[in-house]
Image 1 (cartoon, one colour):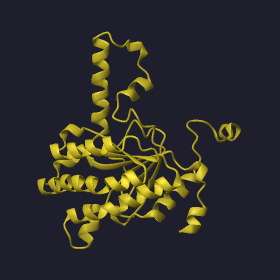
Image 2 (cartoon, rainbow, N blue to C red):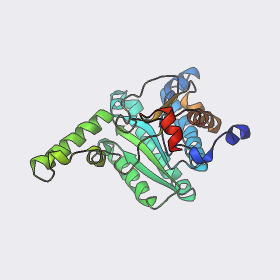
Image 3 (tube, one colour):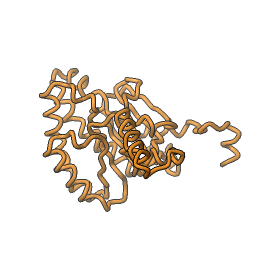
Image 4 (spheres, rainbow, N blue to C red):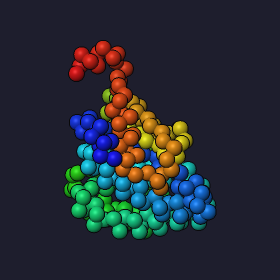
Length: 250
């Protein structure tokens, strides 16, 4: 593991990593347990990802915790997830404070149960001045819904003469997204072997590098994040330019 760490250029770690935490259900099933067992055991992976990201100097970590589509899952599983969310946030708050973690949330938070909303709001408020890393939970989140809402809100401003339609640009759109206070994603990781982005941060990942691993999320640990970042650092991010232009810019 130390060799992997030595292979990482700490000056070039991604500024913003987003993770689709996939494979909890399959992990639980492989052990003859219900899906909820997988969700509970995913907490160790979340801690590993957050702690390791912070140690490496990553400033923003966004975790896809619950999508708008996840509301269609069995009520028992949804209720268990919401209960787990509340318990976890309360339990981890002292650690967030000790490790200087700022907690953030994106999505249709108003759709969460009142208790979950209350706990989430309290933790966000309590950690708002922390500066080491911003840990964002995407909850009741869907990128298409996010973009639709942004268009509606921008349109209202145009109709009410509060915004000139010719002034609409990428910055205006950014400012109307859930992620208005976050930078674009540099690196997206998805676990469990699935290779799709599942309606996650479609606008924000326009130039993100994508990484897919067969590791199921409850098994994801520090060494797996090291592997991912080493892979990321071996790529050339051109943003539409040629390799020669990138070399000249450096």
